[in-house]
Length: 143
Length: 143
Image 1 (cartoon, rainbow over the protein chains, first blue to last red):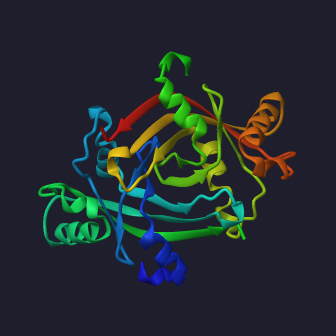
Image 2: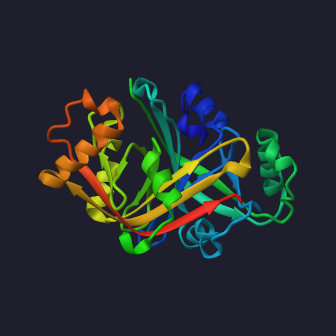
Image 3: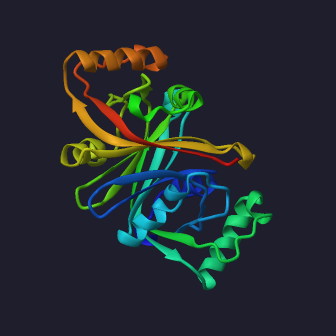
């Protein structure tokens, strides 16, 4: 993503956001959107498939099933405010991969635990991580 | 959507949310996610393609281009809180259509203006509205 050279505020905005929204899709264009906690190291986004309780089991891994079938993903990070002059969003489109193990997965878990104290108490051992490498960034500000 | 019979809190949660996130996709599965202001009348969601300034012109109508090519959409409405026990989301999947004119478009504009005072000052004459009819609802709560 270094070639994309987003402005500094974009990097900061994405890095600091507490939640993003990830769209995945089947190969045949059935989209799925889900809120995600994520870490961004300036080049790559990581989001864990964590062990928060899921009531709706069949839906649980829709994001993972879609990515395995079709790695194209899109993550939007935005600010909503009732003063619409403050509205802004950053859309990162790229490719995702599921990391089941290895050094990069552990690096991602470390980043997630640095950003989210909530993850420090959770057992993320063997939990897969989704790596997202943005290839395109679109930035929008109301003004 | 009446056949889906979501719980009352789901209807209220979606109706009251100030922002949602809509995923669309090309036919070949390239997803796109964008934050949307929307109105929900209990059966149908409406979101305007409004005249907020857009800096990135080529991206401006990606959502509309995708819907014209492929009506499958997904809208997620969620609550983020640092107390993850409060996390919840509702995912509505269905089909979208762009309303260019007519009574339903005017009904949608009225709903949007009731919900968002910001729209009351904006000229939405001739602005298209996206109608989303959910066919499936997935509800998730942390606990």
